[in-house]
Amino acid sequence: MDRRSFLTLPLAATLAARDLETEIAVIGASTGGCAAALAALRNGYRVILTEETDWIGGQLTSQAVPPDEHPWIESFGGTETYRRYRNLVRDYYRNHYPLTEAIRANPRFNPGGGSVSKLTHEPPVSLAVLRGLLQPYLSAGQLTLLLNRKPVAADVTTDRVTAVGLRSPGGAIQVIQARYFIDGTEMGDLLPLTRCEYRVGFESRQQTGEPSAPETPQPANQQSFTVCFAMDHLAGEDHRIERPAQYTFWRDYLPSLKPVNWPDKLLSWKMSNPITLAERAVYFDPTEDASRGDFLNLWIYRRIARKQHHTDGFLRSDISLVNWPQNDYWLGNLIDVPPAEAAKHLEGGRQLSLSLLYWMQTEAPRLDGKQGWPGLRIRPDITGTDDGLAKYPYIRESRRIQAEFIVAEQHVSTAIRKKEGKGEAAEVFSDSVGVGSYRIDLHPSTGGDNYIDVSSLPFQIPLGALLPVRLENLLPACKNLGTTHITNGCYRLHPVEWNIGESAGMLAAEALRLKIAPRAIRKDAKRLAELQARLMAQGIEIAWPKLSPR
Image 1 (cartoon, rainbow, N blue to C red):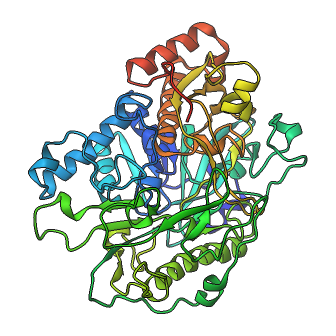
Image 2: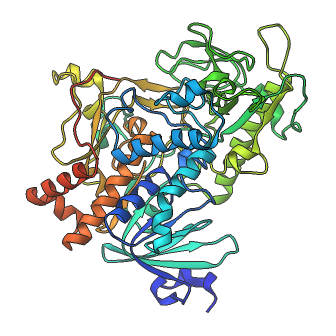
Image 3: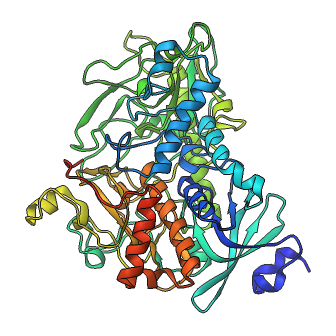
């Protein structure tokens, strides 16, 4: 049979010797997908982990986004395995890099010294750490890892997913049968394939009860995505790239946003303050090692390698990761649009990032009155690609399951909770399976909204948000859980995604152990308490101490 024709038949009917069966299949090795696989594996279950690119890790690796984290992450507010991952990143530098003695002796050194996080570092280091965490299970034969596999179809019998079909680069189809499927893809790709009920974009006030939601649904109004890249600076050298095909468009592009417009052209050192929407003071200078007071030096912001952390002569330059407002792409969507349209916008995002680099190399105004830094050099070795752009765009907003419980603005917003007299604490969920903390941080969107960035309270992850309203054996592992367009803004960052995935992996393991559906665990107080006890015993916090809002 021609395997390319399987879409017209049930997947199970097309099984061949090369196809696979397992207990738990994690489709998508994102940050949350990797955490889900690790949780299921350490609880004794066989796992197949698949990934669309050739790098596992998602935001941390193939999307090249240094961790965005809350200020307590070194001590609490994340899972034990996430903290272990962070420690292993630092250990990797100690074991393999020529660090200065002062840095080597600092138990909490920041490899890149970036201002956005306490752990800015190179994506290949995260890749090595994550591969190291999975390697024992690969050696034992408990884990099967399939790279360069994209989900393209699924079989659903009644309310259970029975098989998922994956396409390899050559076009061949491989079918996976499993008792539980966990969606670890960046855009919730399994949801339409399995006909799982979901939402995307901005819900209406009637749907969610959120005061900040619009009157009518706006499914096409989604957060911008970003094609990240890394660069260093070699003064006196010329590393200018070829002028990008869309450079003229992006050099002249003047954003039109609401309720307050962008202060200048997108390619400029002016931007909206995410909180006030007034003009924010930023600048760029790759020759400086710090920012000037309240003026943010974008070179420092997501710096992932710092020359002075290493012995003399090791690095010729710092390395900075470019994931800035200047290369956020909001002219169209990648989700639920025809393939040709998605490809057009993905290329638009790539062209924007290349245009930003070329502008910085040639025309960008400098504090010394000159223009451009031709010594800026894109680093393909850091992203693992030929052109230096990240393997996959940084996706801020996914399809989201219609869950048994939807986390809404009123559950986490500082202002709303205070207004309603509920104190300085987010909603307490009796079915909590994790915690997280971040501001409600929505980047400019395809519907023309400027930033929506407001304070939120340290929150919990309710089990009900991991349960689709109908399907019994499909679970979300990342940004595809039951949140809204608004609350996605605080549930989408690295440690929260890790916790979502880890709890989903443990939930699948518990359901297999008890031989009952995940929703039955939530409905049974005793079973729920047993699950929560297992989570805590394995280092997953389910409640916060009293803290201040973010």
